[in-house]
Amino acid sequence: MHPGAIPRQPAPAGVRALVREALPEGHDLSVAPVGEGGEHSTWWVGDRYVLRIALDADTTVRQRRELALRDALRPVLPVAVPASVASGTWAPGLAYTVDGRLPGVSAERRPVGAEGEQDLARLLGALRTAAAPPLPARRPRSLDALGAAAGPALARLAADGEVPGGLAVDAAAHPAPAATPVVLHNDLKGEHLLVSSSGRVSGVLDWADAVVGDPAEDVAGLALSVGAPAAGRVAATAGHAPAVAERGLLLARYDTALRLADRLYGDDDSPVPLLRAQLARAWER
Image 1: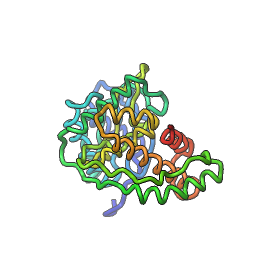
Image 2: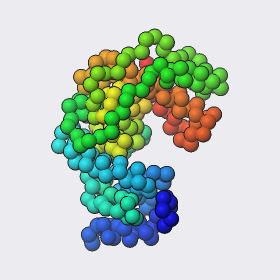
Image 3: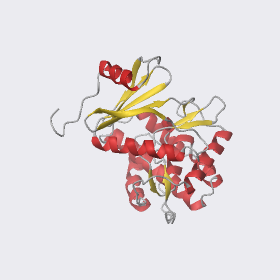
């Protein structure tokens, strides 16, 4: 391999060989791709495991940090997080992990119920005081800058009939970020929340983007996943100040307007139906 080159997505034969080496005999070693992307390759292994393969050095660093973080958080979180049953390198300097699958389906496919909201509130409450391995620190984002960009995006979306004309950026003074940074999942999208048949949160996936930072960011993620009113209730039950919830909802609303506009008029390649659904949830009143 040329120095600095990014490996191609591994072929099924290579994945099967890796799984045979990683897992003991007696397991179902059939593999099927979950999806492919620029950062990682993800495969189902039988019906019990998920194989995630890092394709570059940065993703390898984040994956290894994620494994340590999950192990540290597992005893204190009220919801399940995946556990790695095997990990190592599949190419020089590039990591993989085989994780046990958790029960439930994505919150994009099944709504979170009232008890599930309580699960999420306990999750945010636990993260407020959790001790974790060293994580990157993320500075709070500027709501003024986001709002200035989101206003024209909303106007263009409204002109094209993408959103109701009544949606507008709140020009009032924006709430300041909370003084104390907390551990953040930092990507609480619906696809990372697993929901049981009873509406409980049965697991939270993909902690690779975790940082220490503004608690409003996880509130914003929940607004995209379960809707703004539910995200506000979760934040309040978790013990966050009203300003944290308000800031989180504004982050979500500005972000969703900018992402949908970038997809329709720019170079984002995210699925349009998902972006529309996230915007609708974030702007719920």
